[in-house]
Image (tube, rainbow, N blue to C red; front, side, top):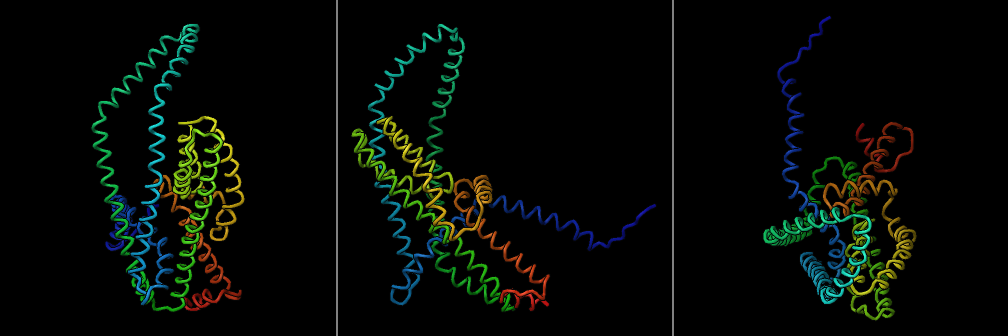
Length: 377
């Protein structure tokens, strides 16, 4: 039995143009991923800064938004510059101390090697050790051969990073300056008032999720930074070889890295432990023990109490969101993944409400959804 499918030229062309268009759009987005990432960073930064901008504009004569934006940027840049200025001297001091102690460190390694040489001779491991040494020398030679090119590449990357950072700041500034006008213009495009109110409520909820999460994460990071700095300061009083001025950069390191959800505080603790072990191993062990105790308090008491007001996501969804964010956009993806997941959850919840309200006309519906369903009919 033969089946003949009759199709006109328009249907045939449309059938092939749709998947072709999807592929072309995907390729275009992939080719613009760096630009889209910069725009996304600028948008996320603008959403964060919009809260202090709105607060400052209330106290500026004439409610001038441009001045409040400029003041907010000046305050943020000054804060970052202060952090770098405070962090640099103690960290450099620890590096210099490590270089000064390097000869004695090498002597200790030599003493340990004498002990190990006895074991190597005893168990006949000379050939394996010689092969490992040769491999290490080859690797070191390759690294030294490319040292100059690595430095040039690093300088080029640093210049590119500075340029992209400046571009992000300019984009965020313009988004804050022109964003409210563009948003008001977008709402005027609606012809259905019920749909406009419905979508506006969703956008406002998503905005509250993003700003609430950021404020909560900043609060958690600030609390942890103060406690970490206090811990390092107490350790410096117990172990006198630890400089007391290391407490402030330790607090700054913890504050910055804790902005990365789930893994940031662990990365900060590792960096601080490395700074401590340069001078004193017992001080590092003490810090790790106290930090692990505080980490349990933060994960089970402080963080849930602050973030539960803004985020309604399970631990599994948070971990999935962070994993996707890291593999898609790196560390920045880890930072924005949770608020994006929260916004997607709002969209899903509202879609389910609308679907139930449309499927059950007799059921009681929320006001905006009822009007929207009625307008659809």
